[in-house]
Length: 311
Image (cartoon, rainbow, N blue to C red; front, side, top):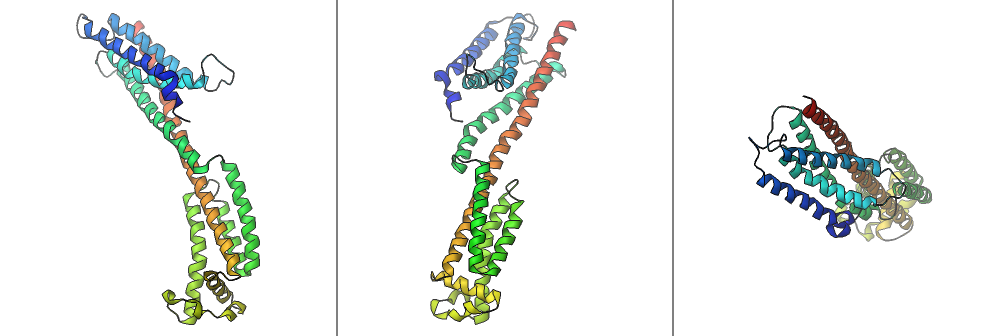
């Protein structure tokens, strides 16, 4: 989501919200009630009525989001007004009670209202930042397409691994098996494991080669390579020779390079899946707090109104 709901209609709803705040502050300043300011004065009832209607309208936004038929006002306009009028409630609600806070349902209603508004501010921040993060992470793709891409990479990787060496093929098959479940949901560990897998192949084989040839790993050069090693019956020794061949762009090193490229590509896709899940989870977790708080505020508001008029 872009910033259109913030700038909607040239900040029309921000101007309306500021107007309500300034009028409320002005009336509160000029009002001369009998006794301390409270919600029992004419101003308190007026501001309370305005605040109550705004709360009802704000809660209705949850219903409006699920209406797919066209209405006079777009969802973006509703959201813009929702944000600005909801923030204005901080001023209107505080002046309504005249800064009088006691251990009663009225104060509980006020606290719930403030908590809802603050959670809404967090939501605004999320909706301004997370969509762009999701877009930069997966672009025009989606999670399903990323899973399909990973499946295609696995097929290519297995085919190339089969052409290189049976031992490499077994290692690749095992890697695919162990990362398959971790993709649902994708985890950062799965991506890290895939990156490490390629490094493990290279480092383990290089260590094996150096151990067999008694050569310092930092001193491995082209002149130390024995092409006959690739014909060895020892899988570990053959794999070592393949890795060394890779360093000098020789076959089957070229195939192994393709395999390592696919491993890195798969790891990048898994990492994208993980980030996409994290970003979307933040929005879901936020809604798990904001929506119940909104409903709790509405219930407390009804109790608050009933208690004022009947007790």
